Length: 179
Image (cartoon, rainbow, N blue to C red; front, side, top):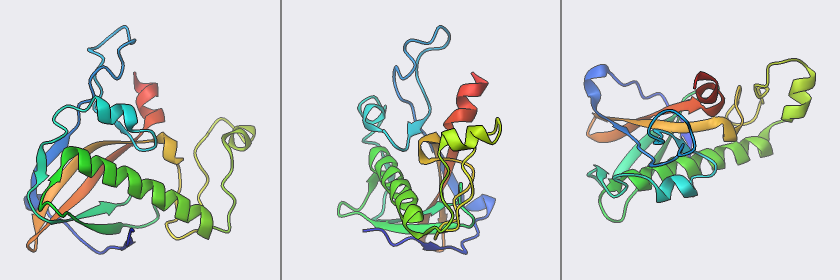
């Protein structure tokens, strides 16, 4: 289903044509401050985010093919090219593709690593830092469990006659601690 390969794509600032952000209505409806909306897509459990996403049907890529670059939190840059039967990709479709690909990458890492992924409990016993230990599988994941990650921006570029998306990914733990 996914053909994820190491990438040597180098984008220039002038290749960037737009930055696509997200708005999830009422994601923080119980928060005392703010409007309750969120700019973040949960990469593990995106069902509620999908239901509440504004402009989900907006066409973001008006082409039958897009390449998405994945670099965080991996030891190198990877790419995956996707095909659309409709000749375009919507905001919702891209969020789902990114989520599904991240889930696949983390599953494949677990299958290919020799280094054991330490549980949060094991990490806390070693000190206050709860970051995920580096593993030595296909992707060399470090720093964050999948549940820590959120998507906030699609940096859309057009280079060499193709659309390329560089992802804006943050750690949910960093976001919560900054509120």
